Amino acid sequence: MKAKNCLIFGGSGQIGSFLIRKLTKNNIKVTVVTRNVHQKGLKIKTQGNAGFIDIKELKIFEENKIEKLFSEADYCINLIGILYENNRGNTFKNIHTIFPTLLAKLCKKHDLKHFVHISALGINDAIDSKYASSKLEGENNILSNFSKTTILRPSVVFSNSDNFSTQFMTLLRRLPLFPLYYSGKTKFMPIHATDLSNVIYHVLSNKIETQVIECVGPEVLTFKEILQILLGLINKKRLLLPMPLSLAKLSAKIFQLLPKPLLTEDQLRLLKYDNIASGKYKTNADIGIPSKLFFKDEVKKYSFMWRDGGEFSTEKYISNTEEKKS
Ligand SMILES: NC(=O)c1ccc[n+]([C@@H]2O[C@H](COP(=O)([O-])OP(=O)(O)OC[C@H]3O[C@@H](n4cnc5c(N)ncnc54)[C@H](OP(=O)(O)O)[C@@H]3O)[C@@H](O)[C@H]2O)c1
Image 1 (tube, rainbow, N blue to C red):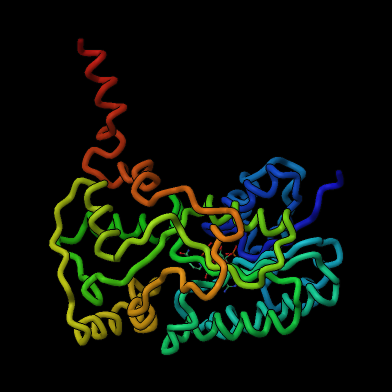
Image 2 (image 1 turned 45 degrees about the vertical axis):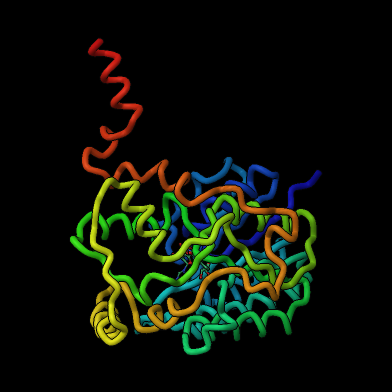
């Protein structure tokens, strides 16, 4: 059977690497668009077999160049997203609203078979967050431009190359105490990047027509429980301190001045809302692809690098050393 062609925007990121592997292993050729082929090319190229991956360097508003890529494509997937704005034009509106709308229009013009857009869970509720409202406006524009679209709304996505479990383990390892925003009660359903990639592949290969699907992991964990799991995995005891909202807002004001902010005021507003299945939309389990990977089991596979002793602290190393001694 002739391989299908899939155009991927944002394929060099966390979810992208897992997705490229999943698609190429299943006989789908991918064209991955990146802003910087020198920086990201090697990472993208090594995610699949030669002949299955093509890379294009483009800026996302070079409309003419982007349009040329659509003439060959069967599917389009948009993974581009940002967590904070900067003064180089990376605004939530540009990235989450205007750009996905352009993609939807091009999907329609070139009559693609399917457009999968990755949005985010909980954006209906988080009305005071600019991140959430830009994602929601983007979703609405896409759906009104191209009906053969599936919007996936994941809860927090984790893997060995995330900015979530790895960043928290770095901070927990270094700081003597850790702030709990909203008393650490916000709920999440963390989904592994492998499980999410399986959902994306299933949507494309089974021509799933559902327009919005909430993608969640197999368990509900509060922010505090997530930190406790990570502390257990890296063998550290730290004080988890509920932080008054006024102080949290002040710290976010300061943190957001950093080039790569640890926390912004917008993220703080977002953290107020639970990030779990709403019950109003189908979930990945409802379409037959329940998540199988649990947070603690998966993070355990790479968390040892944040423990004292690093790789030498693993059971495998310790038992090998004992065997040699005896
Ligand atoms: N990770 C999560 O926990 C999570 C949760 C919910 C929703 N999501 C959504 O899922 C999508 C993918 O997430 P991810 O974790 O894989 O993201 P990621 O690792 O941050 O990667 C996103 C990719 O987008 C591209 N990108 C970023 N800013 C860009 C800009 N200004 N212009 C053009 N391209 C830009 C980058 O590709 P190049 O540098 O190669 O151009 C980057 O590799 C995003 O839309 C995100 O909002 C993620």
